[in-house]
Image (cartoon, rainbow over all chains, first blue to last red; front, side):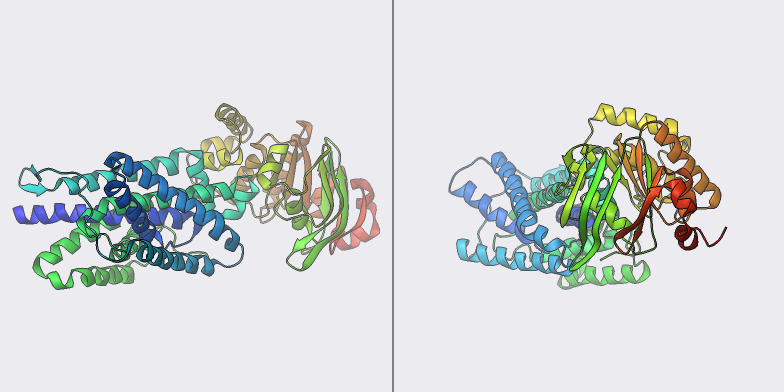
Length: 290
Length: 235
């Protein structure tokens, strides 16, 4: 029982990581209909910047966290303003290809600037693991879980309680109508890319102490985050968050018995879920427009 | 109030409007009639800045609208109710309305919202309901209310009778007359020529991107060509 509770809770902490990356992807996806394949590597690149802020410039951790979020947002603004905007009216597929290319650019740039030698990222929080009744959690895991909850709450408030958020939801449903009503769609797109990419930076920074920092470290995590949003229905922050947690827990349980298949098992589960429920667990929209 | 002067515009390599000139005075309902593909919707899109003006000019109360974004045109006092209503299906009635007054300060938004609920009581009853769950007639009312939310001086209406039951069409056109009395000028694009000429002061007939005929509603109703082509033959 204790083992099971521990596995589930550790799984939730891992799942929170996927949820964080997935929420960033889905925020951009649901407004712009663009699957951002560069989400993970935007975060990776920001994490390199953070690494040198901490080790070389000795910037305090809390400030680095803020700067990383800002750096992610700035990257998002640049990507939308100077890449997405000029291609948007031409072809939807090229927008998606552009994000794939961007992912490679970030990896190449990181390898070129920072080398591919894995770096050990200092832990976010130090101290002994915390005992919560029968389960033991590292402080790092607790921070990630809390961050996922805060980000989910903030995104929810943004999308449902602010006029920019409601406007973003309207664009995802009918972009033409939004323009007809006089909603400044270009600035909403910029805002959404800034938010999504800021989340990329935050997520990667929270995750990296578990791994080692190298140009490819977000690769597998991004695949899991994609699985999470597909599982969650591809159209809601809620779906991405819950999908991420489910994947984290199942993966951790499987890994306990059969460590070798932990990554592939979850993908098989996703395929089976999609066969039974093509719209995912929480998806509303059955048909997608392209 | 509104002057569209020798305007050329279109999509890609094709010019849809060829030197179209129309005008509208304050307090008027002006109808633009024409068949499918005549360029009626293109005309409205050009006025609101969804499509670029290629030649000519669009002026509204001495302000040139050429090159303004749709958001800027709305702020000048022109709203556009698109063909097919385009209600946001998953947003509530209230969210649909509030978005139409995006640039307004919050307090003003609230008072406009209350004004809309007073005018269209059915929308007040359905304020928390998703737009996609409304009936066709209710959606058209919501579309009209969205058009009125920014408190426009001129409203552009694209095929408000499309796909509605005859009784509902009657309500829509009554609303237009009522709006004119309250001081909103209306540019009405319609295929339903008979109904439009009943409420309009003046009308233009658009044929393949050119103005073929213009005059008061009475003149056009009496015109033989109009009778034949747009009013269903000899009456």
